[in-house]
Length: 169
Picture (spheres, rainbow, N blue to C red):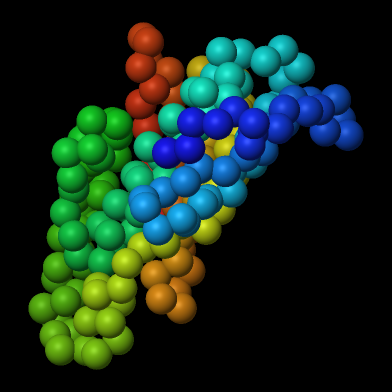
């Protein structure tokens, strides 16, 4: 992850609402994901600090890739269990079971095998700071020629941010 705050630009948009834009570096191959953070209230909360935005965006980017992996027939990981609510985990496990059933019905399809083999590559991320206790993420993830959009909604519970909704399509 890039630790330079110089890449993160903080300004106000045309409606006088806070906005921040930056990039997070993933892996060692030089892949950088563009992150655009929009605030929907004038006073900037603690979640609008560049350090928090970078660290949390990095985690969400990984979660979004794991959500796409879940619909490709892979299970729930420890990182997902750490950041997602129990209800989200149940839904992802159910989706994973559906995909396993689908695989047994349509065994041997070349397109499905190709889809499982290719890596997930995040391209961009949009963040909406809805309130000081709610953040919504939309992440574009490519797998070969297929494009997926992951939506993850976090709520602050006590002092921890927990995903209360996770969807991919």
